[in-house]
Length: 453
Ligand code: ADP
Ligand code: MG
Image 1 (cartoon, rainbow, N blue to C red):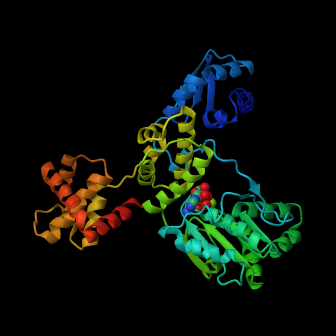
Image 2: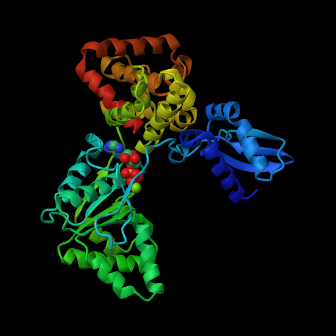
Image 3: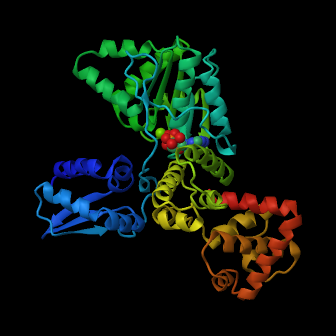
Protein backbone atom coordinates (compact mmCIF):
# COMPACT_ATOMS: atom_id res chain seq x y z
CA UNK A 1 0.00 0.00 0.00
CA UNK A 2 1.67 3.18 -1.09
CA UNK A 3 1.45 6.62 0.45
CA UNK A 4 0.11 7.69 -2.88
CA UNK A 5 -2.94 5.47 -2.98
CA UNK A 6 -3.81 6.33 0.62
CA UNK A 7 -3.51 9.94 -0.49
CA UNK A 8 -6.01 9.25 -3.25
CA UNK A 9 -8.37 7.53 -0.87
CA UNK A 10 -8.21 10.53 1.41
CA UNK A 11 -8.93 12.89 -1.46
CA UNK A 12 -12.03 10.89 -2.30
CA UNK A 13 -13.07 10.93 1.32
CA UNK A 14 -12.93 14.73 1.48
CA UNK A 15 -15.63 14.77 -1.20
CA UNK A 16 -17.72 12.16 0.60
CA UNK A 17 -17.64 13.46 4.15
CA UNK A 18 -17.02 17.18 3.71
CA UNK A 19 -14.10 19.34 4.74
CA UNK A 20 -14.90 19.73 8.44
CA UNK A 21 -15.53 16.06 9.04
CA UNK A 22 -12.47 15.25 7.06
CA UNK A 23 -10.10 17.45 8.97
CA UNK A 24 -11.55 16.45 12.30
CA UNK A 25 -11.82 12.72 11.86
CA UNK A 26 -10.13 11.42 8.74
CA UNK A 27 -7.03 13.52 8.43
CA UNK A 28 -5.59 12.40 11.79
CA UNK A 29 -5.86 8.75 10.75
CA UNK A 30 -2.97 6.85 9.31
CA UNK A 31 -3.10 3.69 7.31
CA UNK A 32 -0.57 1.29 8.72
CA UNK A 33 -0.94 -1.38 6.12
CA UNK A 34 -3.13 -4.01 4.54
CA UNK A 35 -2.51 -7.59 5.37
CA UNK A 36 -4.62 -10.64 4.49
CA UNK A 37 -7.58 -8.47 3.62
CA UNK A 38 -7.42 -6.47 6.84
CA UNK A 39 -6.61 -2.78 6.61
CA UNK A 40 -5.05 -1.52 9.82
CA UNK A 41 -5.83 2.12 10.49
CA UNK A 42 -4.58 4.05 13.46
CA UNK A 43 -6.47 6.84 15.22
CA UNK A 44 -4.82 9.10 17.80
CA UNK A 45 -7.26 8.37 20.63
CA UNK A 46 -9.80 5.78 21.65
CA UNK A 47 -12.54 8.33 21.43
CA UNK A 48 -11.66 9.13 17.84
CA UNK A 49 -11.26 5.49 16.96
CA UNK A 50 -14.73 4.66 18.24
CA UNK A 51 -16.29 7.62 16.55
CA UNK A 52 -14.63 6.93 13.23
CA UNK A 53 -15.47 3.26 13.25
CA UNK A 54 -19.08 4.00 14.09
CA UNK A 55 -19.56 6.76 11.57
CA UNK A 56 -17.10 6.44 8.75
CA UNK A 57 -16.09 2.79 8.51
CA UNK A 58 -18.39 2.05 5.59
CA UNK A 59 -17.20 4.99 3.57
CA UNK A 60 -13.54 4.36 4.23
CA UNK A 61 -13.96 0.73 3.30
CA UNK A 62 -15.72 1.65 0.08
CA UNK A 63 -12.99 4.07 -0.94
CA UNK A 64 -10.23 1.62 -0.12
CA UNK A 65 -11.87 -0.92 -2.38
CA UNK A 66 -12.54 1.64 -5.08
CA UNK A 67 -8.85 2.36 -5.16
CA UNK A 68 -8.24 -1.24 -6.11
CA UNK A 69 -7.32 -2.71 -2.77
CA UNK A 70 -8.59 -6.06 -1.68
CA UNK A 71 -9.96 -5.30 1.72
CA UNK A 72 -12.26 -7.51 3.72
CA UNK A 73 -12.55 -5.29 6.75
CA UNK A 74 -10.86 -2.51 8.66
CA UNK A 75 -9.21 -2.83 12.00
CA UNK A 76 -9.06 0.48 13.85
CA UNK A 77 -6.28 0.84 16.36
CA UNK A 78 -4.90 3.36 18.76
CA UNK A 79 -1.22 3.76 19.45
CA UNK A 80 -0.05 1.62 22.33
CA UNK A 81 0.29 3.41 25.60
CA UNK A 82 3.92 4.30 25.59
CA UNK A 83 4.34 7.85 26.87
CA UNK A 84 4.17 10.16 23.90
CA UNK A 85 6.29 13.29 23.76
CA UNK A 86 3.79 15.99 24.50
CA UNK A 87 4.75 18.18 21.58
CA UNK A 88 3.83 15.45 19.12
CA UNK A 89 0.51 14.52 20.53
CA UNK A 90 -1.71 17.21 19.26
CA UNK A 91 -2.63 17.47 15.68
CA UNK A 92 -4.98 20.43 15.80
CA UNK A 93 -8.19 19.42 14.13
CA UNK A 94 -10.41 21.86 12.32
CA UNK A 95 -8.01 24.68 13.13
CA UNK A 96 -8.92 28.04 11.70
CA UNK A 97 -7.36 28.37 8.27
CA UNK A 98 -3.89 29.87 8.27
CA UNK A 99 -3.59 32.78 5.94
CA UNK A 100 -0.01 33.07 4.90
CA UNK A 101 1.13 36.64 4.57
CA UNK A 102 4.54 37.47 3.21
CA UNK A 103 6.99 39.46 5.21
CA UNK A 104 6.89 42.90 3.60
CA UNK A 105 8.80 42.96 0.35
CA UNK A 106 8.14 40.44 -2.33
CA UNK A 107 11.72 40.32 -3.43
CA UNK A 108 12.83 39.04 -0.05
CA UNK A 109 12.93 35.30 0.44
CA UNK A 110 11.17 35.42 3.80
CA UNK A 111 9.05 32.70 5.26
CA UNK A 112 5.26 33.17 5.26
CA UNK A 113 3.91 34.82 8.38
CA UNK A 114 1.02 33.39 10.30
CA UNK A 115 -1.72 36.03 10.30
CA UNK A 116 -2.85 34.93 13.74
CA UNK A 117 0.47 35.60 15.42
CA UNK A 118 -0.04 39.24 16.35
CA UNK A 119 0.54 41.23 19.51
CA UNK A 120 -3.22 41.40 19.96
CA UNK A 121 -3.51 37.66 20.24
CA UNK A 122 -0.46 37.30 22.49
CA UNK A 123 -1.41 36.90 26.13
CA UNK A 124 1.07 38.51 28.48
CA UNK A 125 1.84 37.08 31.90
CA UNK A 126 4.72 36.95 34.35
CA UNK A 127 6.64 34.28 32.44
CA UNK A 128 6.78 36.23 29.17
CA UNK A 129 6.37 39.88 30.08
CA UNK A 130 9.98 40.82 29.50
CA UNK A 131 10.18 39.07 26.14
CA UNK A 132 6.92 40.71 25.14
CA UNK A 133 8.11 44.17 26.18
CA UNK A 134 11.35 43.76 24.27
CA UNK A 135 9.50 42.56 21.15
CA UNK A 136 7.17 45.55 21.38
CA UNK A 137 10.11 47.88 21.53
CA UNK A 138 11.64 46.38 18.40
CA UNK A 139 8.26 46.56 16.67
CA UNK A 140 8.16 50.31 17.14
CA UNK A 141 10.81 50.51 14.47
CA UNK A 142 12.60 53.34 16.24
CA UNK A 143 16.33 53.65 16.74
CA UNK A 144 17.93 50.33 17.62
CA UNK A 145 18.42 50.15 21.36
CA UNK A 146 19.70 46.62 21.73
CA UNK A 147 21.20 44.42 19.10
CA UNK A 148 20.49 41.64 18.72
CA UNK A 149 17.35 40.85 20.63
CA UNK A 150 17.87 37.24 21.56
CA UNK A 151 14.72 35.38 22.63
CA UNK A 152 15.02 31.92 24.01
CA UNK A 153 12.83 29.36 25.70
CA UNK A 154 11.39 25.87 25.41
CA UNK A 155 9.13 24.59 22.66
CA UNK A 156 5.77 26.26 22.23
CA UNK A 157 6.32 29.18 24.55
CA UNK A 158 5.72 31.87 21.93
CA UNK A 159 9.07 32.70 20.32
CA UNK A 160 7.81 32.38 16.77
CA UNK A 161 4.58 34.11 17.69
CA UNK A 162 6.48 37.15 18.96
CA UNK A 163 8.72 37.33 15.91
CA UNK A 164 5.75 37.21 13.54
CA UNK A 165 4.05 39.84 15.67
CA UNK A 166 7.06 42.11 15.24
CA UNK A 167 6.94 41.65 11.47
CA UNK A 168 3.18 42.35 11.32
CA UNK A 169 3.47 45.41 13.46
CA UNK A 170 6.39 46.81 11.46
CA UNK A 171 4.58 46.26 8.19
CA UNK A 172 1.88 48.72 9.29
CA UNK A 173 3.97 51.14 11.31
CA UNK A 174 6.99 51.23 9.08
CA UNK A 175 5.99 50.07 5.60
CA UNK A 176 9.21 51.62 4.34
CA UNK A 177 11.30 49.10 6.25
CA UNK A 178 12.51 45.91 4.69
CA UNK A 179 11.77 43.18 7.19
CA UNK A 180 12.99 39.67 6.68
CA UNK A 181 11.87 36.76 8.83
CA UNK A 182 13.10 33.24 8.24
CA UNK A 183 14.18 30.17 10.13
CA UNK A 184 17.85 29.32 10.54
CA UNK A 185 17.14 26.24 8.49
CA UNK A 186 15.89 28.38 5.61
CA UNK A 187 18.89 30.59 5.97
CA UNK A 188 21.10 27.59 5.51
CA UNK A 189 19.06 26.34 2.61
CA UNK A 190 19.30 29.69 0.82
CA UNK A 191 22.98 29.82 1.48
CA UNK A 192 23.66 26.36 0.11
CA UNK A 193 21.51 27.11 -2.89
CA UNK A 194 23.39 30.32 -3.56
CA UNK A 195 26.70 28.48 -3.35
CA UNK A 196 25.47 25.87 -5.74
CA UNK A 197 24.08 28.38 -8.22
CA UNK A 198 27.16 30.58 -7.87
CA UNK A 199 25.04 33.48 -6.68
CA UNK A 200 26.73 34.07 -3.44
CA UNK A 201 27.18 37.77 -4.15
CA UNK A 202 23.44 38.18 -4.67
CA UNK A 203 22.85 36.28 -1.50
CA UNK A 204 25.11 38.53 0.49
CA UNK A 205 23.73 41.66 -1.03
CA UNK A 206 20.19 40.63 -0.39
CA UNK A 207 20.73 39.79 3.27
CA UNK A 208 22.69 42.95 3.83
CA UNK A 209 19.96 45.12 2.36
CA UNK A 210 17.32 44.50 4.99
CA UNK A 211 16.44 46.79 7.86
CA UNK A 212 15.28 44.11 10.24
CA UNK A 213 16.48 40.53 10.10
CA UNK A 214 14.80 37.88 12.19
CA UNK A 215 16.21 34.38 12.32
CA UNK A 216 14.16 31.76 14.15
CA UNK A 217 15.57 28.66 15.86
CA UNK A 218 19.18 29.59 15.41
CA UNK A 219 20.34 26.53 17.37
CA UNK A 220 19.83 24.77 14.06
CA UNK A 221 23.04 26.13 12.57
CA UNK A 222 25.20 24.84 15.43
CA UNK A 223 27.82 22.51 14.04
CA UNK A 224 27.17 23.58 10.43
CA UNK A 225 30.41 25.37 9.89
CA UNK A 226 30.15 27.25 6.64
CA UNK A 227 26.59 28.33 7.41
CA UNK A 228 27.73 29.62 10.78
CA UNK A 229 30.51 31.49 9.11
CA UNK A 230 28.16 33.16 6.63
CA UNK A 231 25.66 33.91 9.36
CA UNK A 232 28.38 35.58 11.37
CA UNK A 233 29.34 37.86 8.49
CA UNK A 234 25.76 38.76 7.70
CA UNK A 235 25.16 39.45 11.33
CA UNK A 236 28.17 41.73 11.67
CA UNK A 237 27.44 43.60 8.48
CA UNK A 238 23.92 44.39 9.66
CA UNK A 239 24.93 45.36 13.17
CA UNK A 240 27.58 47.67 11.74
CA UNK A 241 24.92 49.40 9.67
CA UNK A 242 22.76 49.81 12.75
CA UNK A 243 20.12 47.39 11.49
CA UNK A 244 18.00 45.47 13.96
CA UNK A 245 18.45 41.75 14.39
CA UNK A 246 16.15 39.43 16.28
CA UNK A 247 17.19 35.88 16.98
CA UNK A 248 15.41 33.00 18.67
CA UNK A 249 16.70 29.73 20.00
CA UNK A 250 15.54 26.96 22.26
CA UNK A 251 18.27 27.74 24.79
CA UNK A 252 20.59 30.50 25.93
CA UNK A 253 23.54 31.39 23.69
CA UNK A 254 25.96 29.97 26.22
CA UNK A 255 24.19 26.63 26.14
CA UNK A 256 24.15 26.03 22.41
CA UNK A 257 26.74 23.38 21.70
CA UNK A 258 28.98 23.53 18.65
CA UNK A 259 28.45 27.21 18.21
CA UNK A 260 31.55 29.18 17.39
CA UNK A 261 32.77 31.23 20.29
CA UNK A 262 32.77 34.50 18.35
CA UNK A 263 29.15 33.97 17.34
CA UNK A 264 28.21 33.11 20.87
CA UNK A 265 29.69 36.29 22.24
CA UNK A 266 28.10 38.32 19.46
CA UNK A 267 24.71 36.88 20.31
CA UNK A 268 25.18 37.71 23.95
CA UNK A 269 26.04 41.32 23.47
CA UNK A 270 22.51 42.55 22.85
CA UNK A 271 19.51 41.86 25.02
CA UNK A 272 19.04 38.23 25.97
CA UNK A 273 15.58 37.43 27.31
CA UNK A 274 14.04 34.11 28.12
CA UNK A 275 10.46 32.96 27.94
CA UNK A 276 9.81 31.05 31.13
CA UNK A 277 7.61 28.00 31.29
CA UNK A 278 3.97 29.04 31.55
CA UNK A 279 2.30 29.36 34.90
CA UNK A 280 -1.29 28.58 35.74
CA UNK A 281 -2.53 32.17 35.34
CA UNK A 282 -0.97 32.55 31.92
CA UNK A 283 -2.38 29.25 30.73
CA UNK A 284 -5.82 30.19 31.94
CA UNK A 285 -5.50 33.59 30.27
CA UNK A 286 -4.56 31.98 26.97
CA UNK A 287 -7.43 29.52 27.18
CA UNK A 288 -9.89 32.32 27.90
CA UNK A 289 -8.64 34.37 24.98
CA UNK A 290 -8.84 31.44 22.56
CA UNK A 291 -12.26 30.52 23.87
CA UNK A 292 -13.54 33.94 22.87
CA UNK A 293 -12.40 33.25 19.33
CA UNK A 294 -14.12 29.88 19.29
CA UNK A 295 -17.36 31.27 20.66
CA UNK A 296 -17.58 33.25 17.46
CA UNK A 297 -16.89 30.18 15.36
CA UNK A 298 -19.22 27.85 17.20
CA UNK A 299 -22.12 30.00 18.32
CA UNK A 300 -24.46 28.30 20.74
CA UNK A 301 -21.87 25.93 22.12
CA UNK A 302 -22.01 25.73 25.91
CA UNK A 303 -18.95 25.63 28.07
CA UNK A 304 -19.36 24.41 31.63
CA UNK A 305 -17.66 26.15 34.54
CA UNK A 306 -14.34 24.78 35.58
CA UNK A 307 -13.31 23.24 32.28
CA UNK A 308 -10.76 25.90 31.39
CA UNK A 309 -9.39 25.83 34.93
CA UNK A 310 -9.07 22.08 34.70
CA UNK A 311 -7.14 22.29 31.43
CA UNK A 312 -4.90 25.09 32.70
CA UNK A 313 -4.11 22.99 35.71
CA UNK A 314 -3.54 19.71 33.95
CA UNK A 315 -1.81 20.69 30.73
CA UNK A 316 1.32 22.39 31.85
CA UNK A 317 3.63 21.35 29.03
CA UNK A 318 3.39 24.05 26.41
CA UNK A 319 1.01 26.45 24.78
CA UNK A 320 0.82 24.57 21.52
CA UNK A 321 -0.49 21.49 23.28
CA UNK A 322 -2.89 23.62 25.28
CA UNK A 323 -4.28 25.20 22.12
CA UNK A 324 -4.55 21.87 20.38
CA UNK A 325 -6.56 20.53 23.29
CA UNK A 326 -8.99 23.42 23.14
CA UNK A 327 -9.35 23.18 19.38
CA UNK A 328 -10.15 19.52 19.57
CA UNK A 329 -12.55 20.03 22.43
CA UNK A 330 -14.61 22.59 20.54
CA UNK A 331 -14.60 20.55 17.36
CA UNK A 332 -15.78 17.46 19.21
CA UNK A 333 -18.43 19.23 21.19
CA UNK A 334 -19.89 20.90 18.15
CA UNK A 335 -19.93 17.68 16.16
CA UNK A 336 -21.57 15.61 18.85
CA UNK A 337 -23.79 18.52 19.83
CA UNK A 338 -22.89 18.35 23.49
CA UNK A 339 -22.01 20.89 26.10
CA UNK A 340 -18.31 21.09 26.91
CA UNK A 341 -18.09 19.58 30.35
CA UNK A 342 -15.31 18.10 32.43
CA UNK A 343 -16.48 14.66 31.40
CA UNK A 344 -16.33 15.48 27.73
CA UNK A 345 -12.90 17.00 28.19
CA UNK A 346 -11.60 13.93 29.94
CA UNK A 347 -13.16 11.68 27.34
CA UNK A 348 -11.77 13.33 24.26
CA UNK A 349 -8.43 14.48 25.60
CA UNK A 350 -7.26 11.27 27.27
CA UNK A 351 -4.09 11.13 25.24
CA UNK A 352 -3.09 14.73 25.91
CA UNK A 353 -3.93 14.53 29.58
CA UNK A 354 -1.97 11.35 29.94
CA UNK A 355 1.07 12.79 28.20
CA UNK A 356 0.92 15.91 30.32
CA UNK A 357 0.65 14.12 33.62
CA UNK A 358 3.01 15.85 35.89
CA UNK A 359 5.43 13.49 37.47
CA UNK A 360 6.13 15.40 40.64
CA UNK A 361 7.44 13.08 43.30
CA UNK A 362 6.90 13.27 47.03
CA UNK A 363 10.67 13.49 47.50
CA UNK A 364 10.80 16.56 45.29
CA UNK A 365 7.99 18.14 47.23
CA UNK A 366 9.71 17.48 50.52
CA UNK A 367 12.95 18.89 49.20
CA UNK A 368 11.41 22.09 47.83
CA UNK A 369 9.32 22.68 50.93
CA UNK A 370 12.29 22.10 53.24
CA UNK A 371 14.33 24.54 51.17
CA UNK A 372 11.58 27.11 51.19
CA UNK A 373 11.09 27.04 54.96
CA UNK A 374 14.73 26.55 55.64
CA UNK A 375 14.35 23.33 57.59
CA UNK A 376 16.27 20.10 57.17
CA UNK A 377 15.03 17.53 54.72
CA UNK A 378 15.35 14.92 57.46
CA UNK A 379 12.89 16.91 59.59
CA UNK A 380 10.22 16.37 56.94
CA UNK A 381 10.32 12.72 57.78
CA UNK A 382 11.47 12.84 61.40
CA UNK A 383 9.40 13.01 64.59
CA UNK A 384 9.93 16.64 65.73
CA UNK A 385 6.68 18.32 66.63
CA UNK A 386 7.48 21.99 67.13
CA UNK A 387 5.46 24.19 64.89
CA UNK A 388 8.38 25.58 62.84
CA UNK A 389 8.88 22.07 61.57
CA UNK A 390 5.42 20.55 61.81
CA UNK A 391 3.85 23.27 59.66
CA UNK A 392 6.20 22.89 56.69
CA UNK A 393 5.75 19.15 56.98
CA UNK A 394 1.99 19.59 56.73
CA UNK A 395 2.44 21.84 53.71
CA UNK A 396 4.44 19.06 52.10
CA UNK A 397 1.69 16.57 52.92
CA UNK A 398 -0.89 18.88 51.44
CA UNK A 399 1.12 19.31 48.24
CA UNK A 400 1.79 15.59 48.02
CA UNK A 401 -1.92 14.93 48.05
CA UNK A 402 -2.62 17.64 45.51
CA UNK A 403 0.22 17.20 43.07
CA UNK A 404 0.67 13.45 42.99
CA UNK A 405 -1.68 10.53 42.61
CA UNK A 406 -0.38 8.83 45.75
CA UNK A 407 -2.88 7.56 48.31
CA UNK A 408 -2.87 8.73 51.92
CA UNK A 409 -1.27 5.51 53.25
CA UNK A 410 1.44 5.81 50.60
CA UNK A 411 2.08 9.42 51.51
CA UNK A 412 2.20 8.36 55.17
CA UNK A 413 4.91 5.84 54.36
CA UNK A 414 7.04 8.52 52.67
CA UNK A 415 6.67 10.76 55.70
CA UNK A 416 8.53 8.47 58.02
CA UNK A 417 5.85 5.79 58.28
CA UNK A 418 3.08 8.02 59.60
CA UNK A 419 -0.48 6.79 59.75
CA UNK A 420 -2.87 7.91 56.99
CA UNK A 421 -5.06 9.69 59.57
CA UNK A 422 -2.07 11.86 60.51
CA UNK A 423 -1.64 12.78 56.86
CA UNK A 424 -5.32 13.58 56.53
CA UNK A 425 -5.16 15.73 59.64
CA UNK A 426 -2.16 17.59 58.23
CA UNK A 427 -3.88 18.26 54.92
CA UNK A 428 -7.06 19.49 56.64
CA UNK A 429 -5.02 21.76 58.87
CA UNK A 430 -3.44 23.47 55.87
CA UNK A 431 -6.77 23.78 54.09
CA UNK A 432 -8.27 25.43 57.17
CA UNK A 433 -5.39 27.78 57.72
CA UNK A 434 -5.32 28.88 54.10
CA UNK A 435 -8.77 30.40 54.46
CA UNK A 436 -7.41 33.30 56.55
CA UNK A 437 -3.67 33.05 56.35
CA UNK A 438 -2.57 34.93 53.23
CA UNK A 439 1.09 34.29 53.76
CA UNK A 440 0.52 30.57 53.90
CA UNK A 441 -1.65 30.67 50.80
CA UNK A 442 1.07 32.53 48.94
CA UNK A 443 3.70 30.08 50.10
CA UNK A 444 1.65 27.15 48.95
CA UNK A 445 0.93 28.76 45.59
CA UNK A 446 4.55 29.57 45.05
CA UNK A 447 5.64 26.05 45.92
CA UNK A 448 2.99 24.60 43.68
CA UNK A 449 4.23 26.70 40.79
CA UNK A 450 7.84 25.82 41.41
CA UNK A 451 7.00 22.16 41.48
CA UNK A 452 4.79 22.25 38.43
CA UNK A 453 7.13 24.15 36.16
P1 ADP B 1 7.84 28.52 19.89
O1 ADP B 1 8.25 29.22 18.63
O2 ADP B 1 8.39 29.16 21.12
O3 ADP B 1 8.08 27.04 19.87
P2 ADP B 1 5.22 29.36 19.07
O4 ADP B 1 5.44 30.82 18.97
O5 ADP B 1 5.15 28.61 17.80
O6 ADP B 1 6.27 28.69 20.06
O7 ADP B 1 3.89 29.14 19.92
C1 ADP B 1 3.17 27.92 19.89
C2 ADP B 1 1.69 28.21 19.88
O8 ADP B 1 1.31 28.76 21.11
C3 ADP B 1 1.29 29.22 18.83
O9 ADP B 1 0.06 28.85 18.27
C4 ADP B 1 1.17 30.51 19.60
O10 ADP B 1 0.21 31.37 19.02
C5 ADP B 1 0.73 30.04 20.95
N1 ADP B 1 1.20 30.89 22.03
C6 ADP B 1 2.38 30.80 22.69
N2 ADP B 1 2.46 31.73 23.66
C7 ADP B 1 1.30 32.44 23.61
C8 ADP B 1 0.78 33.53 24.36
N3 ADP B 1 1.46 34.11 25.35
N4 ADP B 1 -0.45 34.00 24.02
C9 ADP B 1 -1.15 33.43 23.03
N5 ADP B 1 -0.73 32.38 22.30
C10 ADP B 1 0.49 31.89 22.58
MG1 MG C 1 9.13 28.44 16.94
